[in-house]
Length: 150
Image 1 (cartoon, helix red, strand yellow):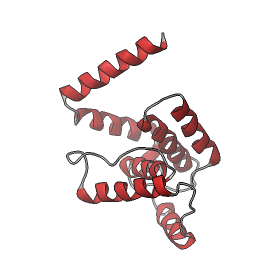
Image 2 (cartoon, helix red, strand yellow):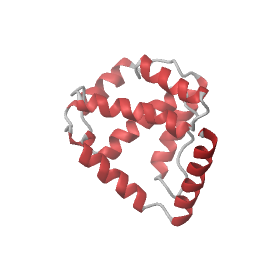
Image 3 (cartoon, helix red, strand yellow):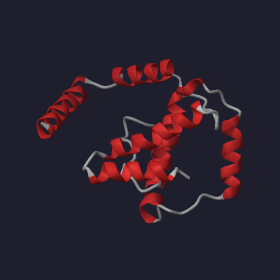
Image 4 (cartoon, one colour):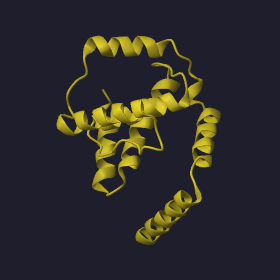
């Protein structure tokens, strides 16, 4: 279960009209904080981000599953399941047995996934995989946001 403050920050982002990915960023940030403070670990930065996105979808953030070319069939199926669960009943508590098992598995993992260097590597790798059209769209959106906020 995500912390109350995280859900509140995501709701505030929604009220301000920010995108679902920005709202989901709050959950990813919470996950990184958990890893840094030693609550649990993660095998990789990608896994830590995936956990945060899953929590966001289950908490009711309207973040659709990734497109076909961006993720595996298994990832998309799980994301679709998380999304529909979050839209149907966002406040439902997870199964205690499954929750304990997940926590125990994550406690065995390392803490390097949330380091600054690891996050930077992940961001650069992600940016490299995006094409020129993607970058152009992002730049246009940034320009619109700047115009709206000035």
